[in-house]
Length: 66
Image (cartoon, rainbow, N blue to C red; front, top):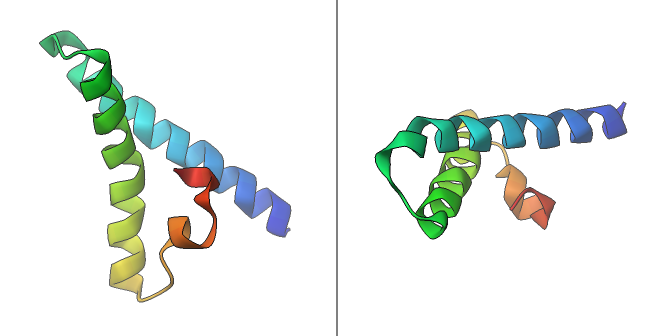
């Protein structure tokens, strides 16, 4: 069960990153800007969620998310 939760977390993080990139795609942003926005979107939402729920931040336990 732990393995399934890990892969669901990876897929969800990738989905958030893609959503952030698609939101900025038509604005003429360079590759670095796209990468930064994708990282902020993917990691930022989960970090805020974990802080609100008062649980350890997910990316501090496993660096694979970053």
